[in-house]
Image (cartoon, rainbow, N blue to C red; front, side, top):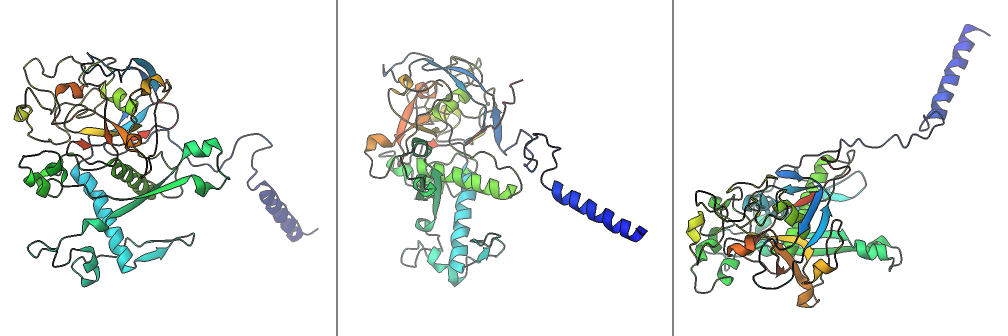
Length: 415
């Protein structure tokens, strides 16, 4: 056999070996799938802090002055999670509104491209000229415009979000088609400015109605006038833009969501079990007599704590987890459905009571837990163990929200 033939045979043998080992280079051993994305174990969502896994005695930390018995003592465990260090601000929520506005503009202009799977998606590279007549339908007509201004019609800014009904999927009460457990909801996402008028009779709050969400003076103040579904839509959108940035070749993270009632209480205590307030003490003033949160001092001296209404989201000192305004400023939506006797039924591991109420459900089914107390509440509602509730389709001038995200894998502090 010539040297040339030997070289040809040798090359063929190498090719056959490579082909036979492709995708099975395991030496006959059980080593797991080798084409998995890398997971470093930690992420760092901007503006969030890590709340470690731990143990908590939930319930009223002080006298139950209303004798409601809705917060009976219970010991629970909570898995580590991330939480926004501040309430969602007007300017952060405005990023959501502007994204929906631009999506609507691109839809009108027909700015679509086809992705790698043949699906149509918005071409965000195209520029939008909101002065163009082509986008006139997004603005109030002349007979509805105030003083001839070109003002965006907020009724057009809708966002559709979806989720899997895990309870239904786990029950098996469906024919096995995934579409049967996917639920969707479309909501208008613009905060309701009229809450400042509706919430307070015989009170001059028109300046807050006109300017609170739009004026730069309030950019760093907590967004209010948002319903529970609007907060859910924000979380869905935040997850979408996060995953879009990660791309297809990286591990997707858990969804942004509202914290559960008990995650919220655990985080608010800042590692101080049974502490009545987020700062760990028993009083709403420090040793110098300064108020430690934004609420309604005394019989209504609103200005004494430094804020007539809301204050910037990073006001006052954070608790020991680094979370601001876990008491006062605005009450906060949680993921949890409110029932007065929930503590008697919940599990002691990551407890939560969840029900996605339909539009035609009775009003009692639409109650969600809100926590933390607000700028218009007395100090009792600032306590870490105090529960409150509101109808999910109601918007208020004293209710906002912040996001949470479950930590995946072994807890950072679990060594």
